[in-house]
Length: 484
Image (tube, rainbow, N blue to C red; front, side):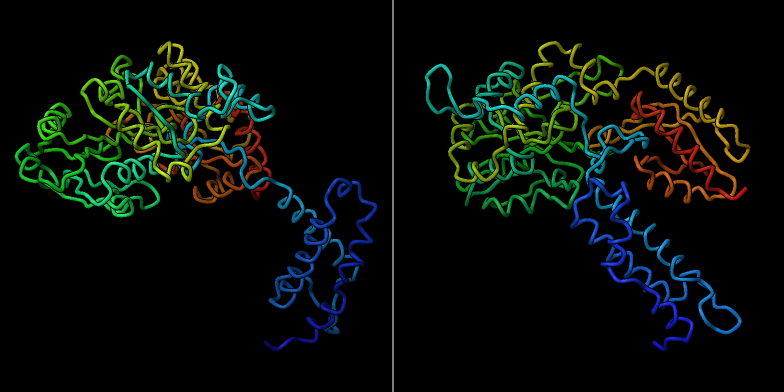
């Protein structure tokens, strides 16, 4: 690329790294910043300035003689401004607080379930202190880390034994490998689900060493389909709860009791992957009933797997429970160590499970359950409060309206359930709705909403009380940046 006379003049005025470091050495703004971060920020700022000059985007116009109209100190000012921006970005955590105004309660991309205060407190204690993670205090010798939650899981579900791994995908993989490696696993074709991250039941089954035996059709599977598939190579009957989609219309599927009865007749274990495990009967709150773990245990399923986050509202974990002989087999699989959870997950999970001893207390304390069951009147009042505060910004370019829309449970659970909600819709004169969405996403505390009905929409079901100030401040700052 040919470089013009004007560009050459500007490039000669670019300072070196050491010169910029000397200039900012006395600036208190950089006092507590690691030197390595500052040096990297200076180099990036100079490189960015060089690229701007070469592409003609530096905003430095030549005078009548064709030389640079801007002088070196002004170039330095632009570079130091870039250094500040680079330092801010470098010092900001990559994983940071984000406002979920999208109305999806268990939002996989935004961290899924929020932990209850009790879980956060216990997590902090265990994280900052030594603990009896694998030490049996009664016997004075090494113990099992699973003891921290096994008794609780058995108490809450009625299972004989339980263990926990790092996530439900791991739980499914470990269970299949332990119980059906080299043997056939019979599963309905309509239950060959795919979840986020392209995790597919056929793929994980292949990795486990089990051989998949599909039966039935996408929409209809009968008992005779299972019976015809059972043979000497059958190692497991698998049922997968289709928690992230629903087949409607002309359908048929086997109940758990039918599959369990078939398994008993042929002495073949039955496993169920619930996906998003649930310990609460949501029908008590006027919502469509989602199968509970307790129901699966009562039906006689031998091994049940489900997530610790999602509807359970705890940390990411894969819970495996059921009959003791099968859980013991799974526990002794060498893969168990590769998939085990750490003390932080155990601490958060234990505290969350303790809340379920009182279901009403669990709904009140666990954020996921709070949001799913939040009364419409509460959401309406919070939406009206936010709308009033945004209108009080007092700028005619800001259009604020209230909208009756729907929230989603998310997390691959209750796919057909629409939760009626009250939302705040925003338009900003001079900005497209997509530009508003980008600006809110780029805020120091990102605000994630959705675009609907030509508005940037914020659903108050998933916005926390102390986040209203963040939203108001973000729009106040945004309006200041819009051309009058």
